[in-house]
Amino acid sequence: MPVKLPRVMTGAELQSMLKSSVNFKSLGGVRVPGLKLGEDKLKWWREAKVGMFIHWGLYSILGRGEWARFNERIPYAEYEQLASEFCPKDFSTDEWAQIASSLGANYMVMVARHHDGFALWDSPGSYLAFDSMHSAARRDFVKEFTASCRKYGMKVGYYYSPMDWRFPGYFDPERLKDNALLMKKQCYSQVNELVTRYGAPDILWYDGGWLAHKGSDTSSSWFWEPDRLNRMVREHAPDCVINPRSGWEGDFYCDEGSAEVSGKIITVPWEKNLCLCSGASWGWMEDDPVQDLDWLIRMLVNVICRDGNILWNIGPDRNGKISPEIRARIAEFGAWIKQNGEAIYKTRGGPVEPVDGVFGTTFSGNRVYVHILDKAAFGQMRLQGLNANVLCACAPDGAPVPFTQTEEGVKIDVSRLADSTDTIVRLTIDKEPIPTVSEVYFSGKQ
Ligand code: GLC
Image (cartoon, rainbow, N blue to C red):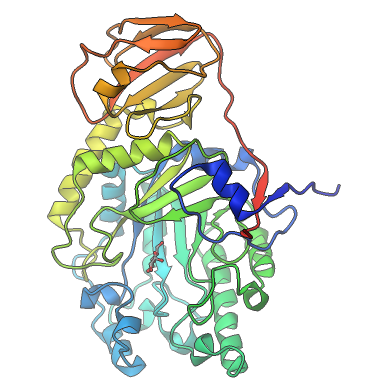
């Protein structure tokens, strides 16, 4: 049966529909009928809400960010030497998975290979055998990571960069075509390895589908043929959730970085990925300040009330260790999220449109969770657009919260609730809201 393609939307219409501060990467990806997962297959991912991202590799030895090799023009021979020093002490991916679990994450995405070309697994497809099996460590870290994720009930995600700075052809694909094609061959072999050697991954997270650092992830699709690449992925991992940054449109949209999230509920699947620290680098940097708890909670609330997922990045040090400061913040955030899990996991954003800086809602079944970020401002407002009768309102501990409902909306008296970053009120309503999902394709054209 022919697959019906969704309506095409241009960038301008997207901006107007989103009315949001999010800035999606990789608009205009190649469309391949039938390759995208349906909502049924995305359900676990949507319900999972929180993931942990890990940037760790040779660059963690230098501690100047994962772009160090490129930014500092480190010659390949010199950078390659780092592999002979790459031998983490007392390293354990179980520890990563335990930390992810204490963060409240349900999935992990590990950088399996970044733009520097160093693969963190035993990769026969790696050009010049630049992988962890041929480093001092002689270990397959992707294998260890995958086993730990499965052991601790985390879904398994791999980040993979199609491009690789080691190839001069990356910088000049027209003139150095053969070399560029060698890089493409490596990409196909390595992606094949990632989807076949350790069981099917749950998430494939591409980054770097451009050429010569120009254009966007989608403008070099003539070269990468992401439709062919991801068809191959689907053969081995039919249910894998794939991001859009290989140049194919993907299963969800990505908003990268620490910018605040505001605006309306977003009706396409999306994920905010950002650093738990300053964001100056995704890989390890000494004394990188950790964001405060309040900021982390507000970010999470702003994302989930707009129906998104959040992927928190951390950069372990050369031994794969996560600093005590980061661990402490993770423990605090995790304790908060677990205490309020009912209003977060397995919910959807809405049904009431958020008001920036004041409140947003999530819901599950006939329960609506009002996340109040500014109690004083909220006290002056009414909830509108609920389209249901409120049967009761209560605080997370079950204590009733006074409210009145009229045609103008629902007025909730939060004055007696304790102050907190996110004051949560649970409403039980007489009708189950239905999440809004738009079948649109963002062409990226203005
Ligand atoms: C940015 C960084 C890159 C990092 C990625 C994660 O694009 O430049 O190094 O891996 O964000 O989304």
